[in-house]
Amino acid sequence: MRTSSTFSILFWIYAKRINYNLAPVYVRITVDKKKLNISLKRRVDIRLWNPQKQRVRGTGKKTRDFNQYLDEVYSKLFQCYQELRAEDERITPQAIKSKFIGDHKTERYTLRNIIQYHNTNMFNKLHGNTSRLYLTSQKYILLFVKKKYKADDIELSELDYKFILNFESFLRNYKPRHYQNRIGNNAVMKHIQRLRRMITLAYQIEWLDHDPFSKFKQKLTPTHRGFLTSEELERIEELHIESLRLKTVRDLFVFSCYTGISYIDLMLLTNESLVLGMDKTNWIVTERQKTRNSVKIPLLAKALVIIERYKYDKRSLINGTLFPRISNQKINAYLKDVAQLAKIKKNLTFHMARHTFATTVTLTNGVPIETISKMLGHRKLTTTQIYAKVIERKVSDDMQVLREKLEKS
Image (cartoon, rainbow, N blue to C red):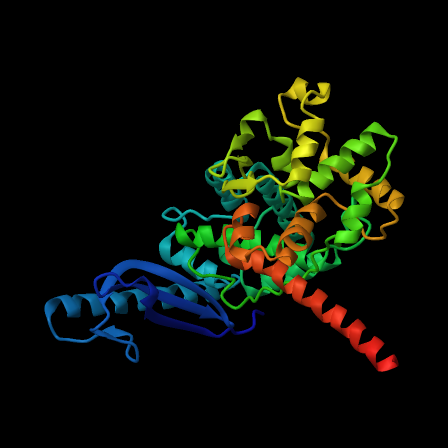
């Protein structure tokens, strides 16, 4: 025998979507604390709405007709609930909504529907690398649905706060085949962030009547942005290397340390990227692949020397680029050998060169943070200010060493 369930009906207006004092009217059905909102496709003057009585104030014909319509909606919803009870069907907000609207009048949208819609309409606006990250997140989302619900898909109306928490738990405990450890906190948050953007899209195009993320708080772990000290950078620059591939990788890394250019942008530099600036000196002018922001960087002497070194290199001439092209994977692998030769114990990656430019080369030498932000191609100054915090940490560490020395003397 089916146990009794709690059921309630609430009419409300969506105050965040007010236009000329008119707000859309929704009805919320709640079954055993599970809620679902249905748009009634009608608007009401917010000045006349009585939230306590859930009706419009007044005695005019339009007011009477509107309130009568709400009464009819209430009666029909209650009837749908009673019919499901009588049929001994599973009573859920979605089941009541389907019966109320009629399956032939409404389309049931699913997770796969919004994933396909998102990819079709958004991928042309995203960078290729970002699109690939979305595909990875979508793979995890559908894998979670398969393991948790024993299904290949799930209706968007079934998504709630609990779904998000369960997905988060799934990610934290999942070990990808290509990765030895579990997924880190920030990577988990990024996958959830991408799910959130797709669900927000579904909400905006009215495939979903509620926002499952309204209570969810994203918790990112602050990351330390590693960089080389001036002494470590000098050791790498002066390193005598016999191997051509290691020497090339070292040069590309040092060039990035003195320009802040990321790997993908560096690989795309051509002779056209090298221009004469307003100060009659050589500049690099390019566009960041990640953000499409314009980047203009005056070249320091050490960067110019490296450009000249590869000006007539066959590997550069073949591709019509300033430098030989090497995959990011190989560069990072070879940098481990460079670090070992230079006796640097840090986990040397190509991206560390960009951090070194922002900290050791520019910020510690008094270059204003606004100027650094422009050269790095950041959209927001707050992104660059992370490096200022790194420098503050370094100052604090150095002063602590000084304190200890003074205390011992």
